[in-house]
Each structure stands twice: as C-alpha cells, then as structure tokens.
Image (cartoon, rainbow, N blue to C red; front, side, top):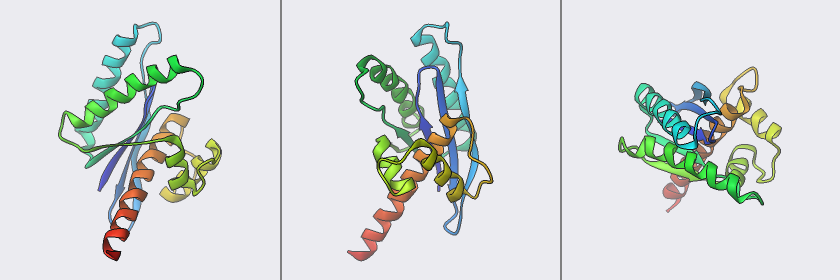
Length: 165
C-alpha cells in the first residue's frame, strides 16, 4: 500500500509518500511545495493544487491522508488552512483515490503513542518508524509523513479488529 500524507498550508504544503510492503514500511519521497507569498490566495492554491496533482500522478498512491487544521483561537488562519486541505483532498478524490482526514491529536496518538506529544517527539518517531538516520526536513514534510504513518496505523488497527470479529 502506498500512502500520500499531506500537511496543508496556504504558502507551504508538506507531502510524504510511504510504502507498506507488508513486511516493511519505507519512505518513498517527501518534501515541501511552495509558491510566492506575494500571489493571491486563489493563485497560490491553484499552484499548490497542480503541484500536488503532479505528485499523485508520479506516485499513484492507494490512499491520501490529510491533516486537518488545528482549530485554535485564530479562526482566519484555520479557515485559510482549510482551503489548502480542500485542494489536497481534491488532488486525490479527482483521481478516485480514497481520502482520509486526521486531527493533529490523532496523528500524535498513532505515531508517538501520546496525543499531546511535542512536534519533536513526533518527528523522532517518524524517523524511527521509517528507519531514517535523520529527521526529515523541512518540518512540513515530517508532518506529512506522520500523517501517512497515522493512516497506516489506523489500517493495521482496523485489520486487527476485523480478524478478532
């Protein structure tokens, strides 16, 4: 199973592709998509969408996993990130790829086994789970890989529960 994880943003979108062969999990690619901050929001979203579509075409993931925006006190920021979340969802859905959404707390719980883990703890666990010698950079890419790993953990849990039934 190949999973594309996405950490959405209106200026930077982190992405990470992992592959689970059944016996091992590895990172295929990760990085951050960017565009000029001077562009309008709609122009940035269009550019980021096209870049995500290129990644989907290149890697042909089985699933897209997207981090939901953190709903803090800054509502405007959360709404803006929600727009970026939508383009990530569309990049997969337009190709018939299932899309799943996870909250930051769900990702932390599944990846670091603690829903209130620090960013550094999650990044370290991403490195360990993928057998990497260093924490993936930039942080947006590490967050996207964490989102992909979260989905993989959910799938494994669902499979275990199905076997028990």
